[in-house]
Image 1 (cartoon, rainbow, N blue to C red):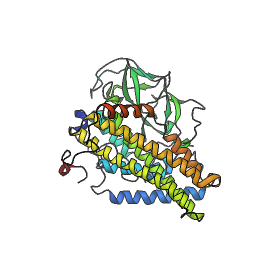
Image 2 (cartoon, one colour):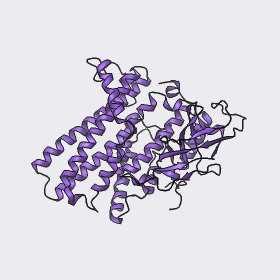
Image 3 (cartoon, rainbow, N blue to C red):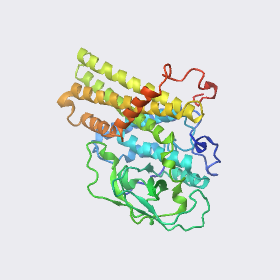
Image 4 (cartoon, helix red, strand yellow):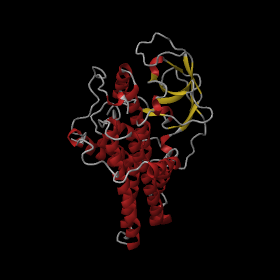
Length: 420
């Protein structure tokens, strides 16, 4: 298994253009057929879960074994230049979410960072990232902040230059909240304020130039405790010009910014499927697997999750079509909002049904329900759900066309599909 260097003791052209090879090192790409990798990873998660249940590991423990399993899975470079198709990437996120929602949150952030570097980074930055992925580094994206958000202070120069001779003199000032993984993430990608715009900075958090400090008591959550999503103060950390990824404003470019929600929805759906499976197994152990009230209750839950999964798959197809210029950005973003809404509604219905089904006895340790329910409830609190619902409603009222439920058969060339 790849050593873990991170664990401390305790549509625009960039998205579709062909990029030059990352380096002369062995490629990060998974084999053309990823099915054996999926099977091996699934079995690994099952064995890991059995071991954690047997050992009674605390629920707030950082998921080092799960991350190590992913490091050795062939999927650690997912989100960057890998051989995973879009549907396979969502399948991977769903699989990780079933194993552990905190693990899924951390891995989704890792994948998000690699995708952003792949889209906006220079050839040299992508090559460096590829090497650090091979070394097993954990990446992440930390965007959320309060009034004391992070600013980039210092000289201004062309941030797209591979060979800038300007020493920069750049420093960070301020803090990020909900920094998932905390200082275990040694390659966080920080959207920071630079003269009124958001600039991506790839921080080498384990280097002497970084003086990130955890704010005590900043992470006492309802659920997802194992992510260690603390508040970190980066004031005084020095960065180089080559640590600036892309141009100011790239982070919020559409459709990439909003379409990334498809990945965290896949993780959430995986966690919900796990909760449904656990509830069903628990009821069977109690001899209530054929109870008609439970059957009625979970029929609706399964239908909601199935609908959300189908919307998610359609969202991935629309994203691919949008990047190919075959579907409008507005249509894709409406679909992304629909996926978010359907996922949240289906998960909330399942949470209510599961609590009612297992009762007080099921919510006691060592049964997994209290942890699964808290984690899913916390993870569902993604930013601005009401804004997503409102955007979708306005689109339906003003822009939706009759018959535009999904792609017409001829609107996406299946002969060139990534699914081939």
